[in-house]
Image (cartoon, rainbow, N blue to C red):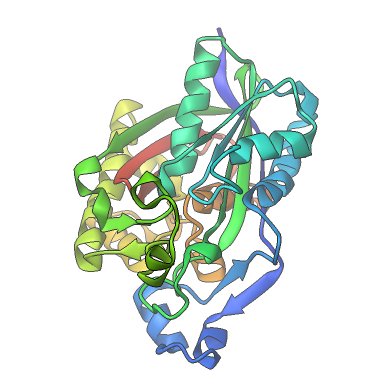
Length: 329
């Protein structure tokens, strides 16, 4: 049947840079040092006016296709992981399909917050294994900057915009996606949520806007930190155990880019050298589903990832959602 293989990766970051010093100058009650100490973020990218999630995904997707040596017309399925689609309907994947000029491909979105890229890889994996489709473009793209209350220093300092992508197929060529592992906990979904925009607050009203229901909210941040650390560590352990390898056999850990203190804690707890964590957090912030996809592409393109290395991608996000993927490069 052939294994599930990654043929190419791609990423795109909008050119506008927003630094911590820019936030200071804006009047936000914060400083560069305060943000770096608590999160590890120094700057983030911001999409320009009129630029959408599918626009960012289009750029990342084209780069992944180029690396794979393919055209969009060869795709059977396009998946977009996002919590910031261009519109609720049609999906971001539909808009992306049109921009790629790939009418033959089936398209839909996946909503799993910061875990979205791994959830989308899992969906692609199932379709490829059962031979429904042969070639899949997985895109994770977010315009998080438009979900933020820029007066709330607990949230707006964290997030940025961008997109990452991967082309997958079933066969003998490429880099093997060994396994994906998914978990959810809906009972605690209120810890990270965007209350407005769904059927609960439709139609949108002056009241819902005035109450800030359409901003991303983080509740019980200290509790979320502990739960997230546990989710990341469980994902790493599960991927290693499922594939019958030791954690020390893994060359790179490319996590969802959440918070540098989390990764310091995880490295210490699991006795992983911290330099094995590939982090883009300081330059891009947290880009929800796109973070680990962008980091994977950068690690491939800068030569950090070498042939025959094991790559673990642990994730945790709103929902609650968490999981991991293990790749043999």
